[in-house]
Length: 557
Image: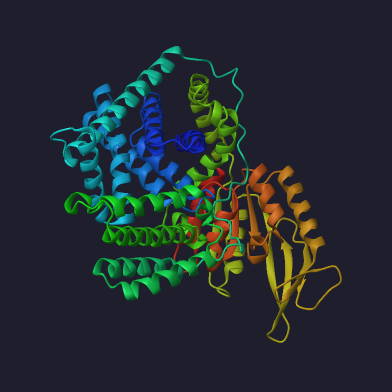
């Protein structure tokens, strides 16, 4: 549902963006409420909406755009409101109506809070001036700013109610029709959707991430305290630095509409801020306040853009996996794998509204089909045990002993070990030993060899990689219960060494694997390939008997 929601946001959002319509954010929230309420009729899983909202929000965060924080908060707010209302009042039309109304109102609140954060409390004074001007021109008596805000909230709530009712009708109608899925073309899932690829094209820094937060807070404190002689040079220096460092993420500054917004704020402040109190409809103080508001907004917008970019740091993203969120990571991988196919099957953004009925039918039909595909895709992925420890701790020695015990239990083990070769207490390279045949080959040395690949201090024989890979595939054809790969290291993470063998095994086999990896590389190895469940066994921390039982349960499953 998160993947479908994200595709809906992309298509409808693109359509509204291209039209440059006012209230496009609210319209998108209306459409999202409609879709979510419709899909709630098809699936009754507890916690479905907030989990789908989390997937959709994270998919937004991993999109190429840098300004992600606002949309993420908006999506999660909508999802939580709908989820909470369903939990409190149950799955019924009244519940959906209240949830839909509050979700769309949240879009208004989100916009108001965002504007107040950007421009400060002076924005309220401008708003009051505009309302008084409108009341005077229209000769409406008794219209206070608070009354206008209440009317807006009622309007937004009504829009949410309509969206919820339409979604409820659409979902129930589709469920009653029981359309057959057999004639519908299945979405092809994109392989290798790697969310946490390490790339050197972007420069990330945790210091910069927290530095931006500190600078933004300091700048806001200076401007609120009226210490402009310090605020001006610091803010200008900060903005220039961001323009240099994040020029790719600040492309929106080239848009004319962006600068028009700042001009309007400045002019409105100059003409409306003090006009009704002084009788002079142009105020120098208002002009200065307008410029101050814009500079404040500029610092915040550029700052949040920089923070959004730094949040794409692979180290930040890896928290999803490192802290036990492997299920969320796998869900995101599946959602991303379906996204291109879903978008390709939907009408283009300009035709979406005109063909909305067929588009919704397409999304509904794909729901169960995609769910079955996801289940099937996950079941095809091999489970992986990563045996890890510090350098020189004896990972290979431990795994050799483990393998002997497995073989004694009549378990067929394929794979290889990398045996360190010493010369006068100095490591000069590695030999490869095949587990099934006992065959040994020289795979690396620290002296250069013609035709060998250099990586770090060693030279590797590419023919040995090829020969051992072919040998493993022959053993798989004969039958094997477990594959051991020693080791998955920097070479493999750089798309060399055993990378191609592992990649093919993950795509075409479900045989459980044991990988040996040093501690510093465990999480990168776990994320690099599309594998099933990952179990990490750390020397001196975990028990060998539990590992043997785990392997046995994998093989006899």
